[in-house]
Length: 110
View (tube, rainbow, N blue to C red):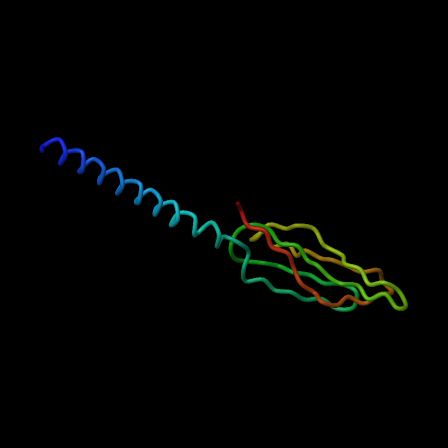
């Protein structure tokens, strides 16, 4: 009978260790999923759009749609900039076209 108690305790201990390991992986994974750019400002006028992000981690990129009179509209993107760099990402349409739907792409660490 002593053997079955020891076996049961070992099995219970192994199950508890597995549960704790699984729980800790889930908890550790949560902050990484939340580590993306935030506190972003989007602006622009005419044929230009820009974005700057001051919080979080990762990178951001300006995106604009360009209005072509009597033609097919298209999308332009700016350079990727790092959060906290102080740099604006700027996307511009051709000078004769207007920018609309100013927005941004964001990328956090994996």
